[in-house]
Image (cartoon, rainbow, N blue to C red):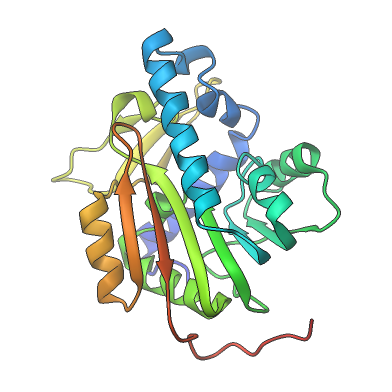
Length: 249
């Protein structure tokens, strides 16, 4: 999969990688509703309830065997996947989050790969692919190449599970300001606690829209939304994508 094509797209992708590298020490505060992400008891309760809904949906998708996690981050989902996997490969562009992930998970059967997901190619096929809060950061022009790469990574009958944010103020990830959609669609500006600002890709999908797009690409998929904060989907293909040889076990 080629990196997003235009010079501006490449600039934003590079800035996005720099942002998540710099934000690695702050990221978990968003997920655990600490500091500026503490929206009060009631909103925090709703958040935790919907996070549990995501976890139950992931468990129901039955991760097992060789598992691939894309954009693995600090390990919030890696630690959920690891007990189910015989082998778990975790890919992320940020060595900083990989270091935090290793510390959190500490499992010998987890292999880490530091790589750009817009150029990385899977070296083998997997039974299960997971990515959490990543698809919204894939530019529209890279959507089809990304899903083609995912298809090549799957064994016949393999499953893909993904989760992401819905567009709600209390789900925002940090120092967040939406661009005016008529001037710069699918972009957001993010601010770190030290005041540095970055421009990143952020595309909010509705479950219906995302389901339709994936079905048009040949996926059997169901995408659901939680009441407020998240969406999650389970996708499968009946046949493997061409172009990837199975590596020896």
